[in-house]
Length: 332
Image 1: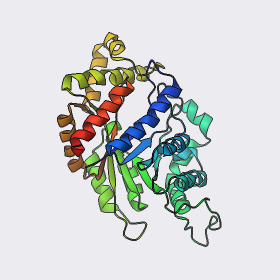
Image 2: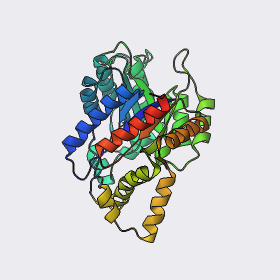
Image 3: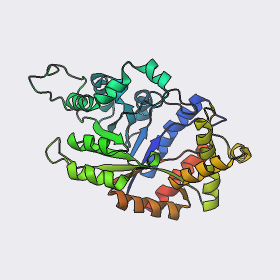
């Protein structure tokens, strides 16, 4: 079973943003040593407790401090940007770090309505134009616009020896079919979806049209997982991210609380119900329990790879979670 890391670069209540970003770099280094296939960093804008609005900047930093692990965006929020610029950026990264770059594409705004307006004009129109934007991006990455196209003489330089691998990220039938129609690998965000993931992925597999000769569909499923030596310890660690999620939902601009801070948070009946529902969409437990569940999800979703999102207050506990899972899954 291939495992990978999706990092949202969380800022804990006792951290500065700089410290959080350096912990992201260290996580990529540790993931490389543990045998994780790839490390992706997410794009968020003015969201409290999240440090990375610009994956392309962090990827240059992380690429320079790692050697073999694949690195990429999870995801570039394409409606905010011109496909040509995205292709230039990721071609440059792929030139610097050959054979290691992924460019994940998403359509979410990544922040509030006000942030969306500050970032780009006509966001909803660009969401509507997403199929055309995706097609143009792929042509720029593949450097293969038809001769009659207005961009046929435009090159997203520098052209790397190994192009970035494009992925489409999503949680719906619409995103799965868009990936399939364009011959793209597909990453399904199980950790942020209540939709029927296995059915969506089955549609992707059945509809897949190769963009290049010999190409096959590829599926990543992204899950929220927290692992510790015991179930009790894992549940305790998970409390920080659960309370943080509640706080963000109320508009509070806090970092990830410590376990002690989270325990002091008094839940009303509605919040208690929300926490229990969030837990159902997480994998929390000891290494054997977590890895067993990951294997079940892999089979259920026909996944080639499982990508893990892990948020704890302590960077050490986050690293330990990834370490315990890797040791159990890879029998290190």
